[in-house]
Length: 241
Image (cartoon, rainbow, N blue to C red; front, top):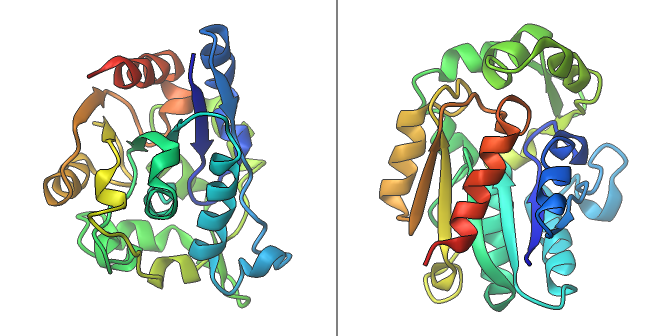
């Protein structure tokens, strides 16, 4: 019925969609969950230009499909799906920002994160490595990502989180109205999100309007805390005019 491409956010991988994929497939959809090029091993120059490398990677996967896709980006992946839309707008049926960063042309993650009410507390949870990458403390993971998620899934996630390059924070996004602006956009808000507070999610939508918004009473990780509701939200967006 539809092709979904689900792109994970910072420190996460395809494993985070494990509760969602079976539900979408049961409804008859095809689902792709690519793992982004590994910055640590320097694949495809991702370590030098992560946003460009990741956007090119997801754009190639999207372009290879036989029909326009529903491209879903969680958190940091909002930057990636925006850049993909700029590259190949005709191959995207809809962009879905899942409590994700929806930035304007020229903005960076740093620009937005520093405006957040919890910026100081979140920064204290990040562990910076000497090699230009960073991770999140176990306490920070629970507090900011999984405050509504069952403990076994929190443990599951903590065993799989990987380092993220800090370069992604300072890389400006490039989008234009004729290309990115021509693609249908939707946003799934998460009211109990401690990583990107709801007020910030709403502010980004005011700055870059979307055609549909669906609200979840979820933490930053509805793929674990509210998988059935998340799938229902994705289906609602797909069916909306």
